[in-house]
Image (cartoon, rainbow, N blue to C red; front, side):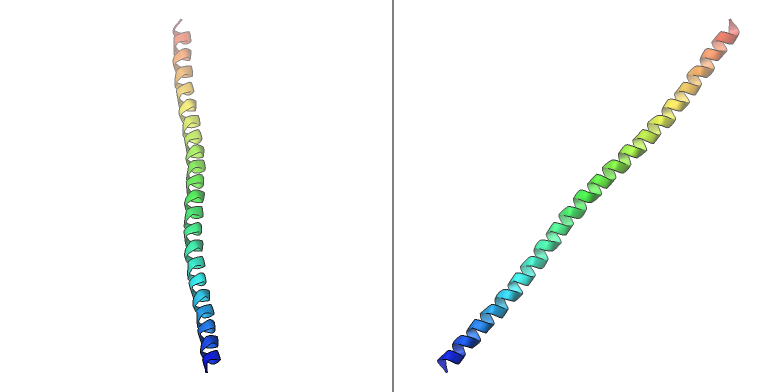
Length: 79
């Protein structure tokens, strides 16, 4: 009877440990995935912002250059 109880206890402990380990691993994986996703999103956002800023700067520079050229041409034509 004692041996049976020991076996039952052992099996119960093993099952309990397995469940605990599964839960811990799930939580760890969730945390890891959250952190990874945050980092990935930050990197993606940084890259997108860089590209957007580059495009905006290009457009602004083009407009400024056009205006400057127009003004220069007007000045040249006046002379």
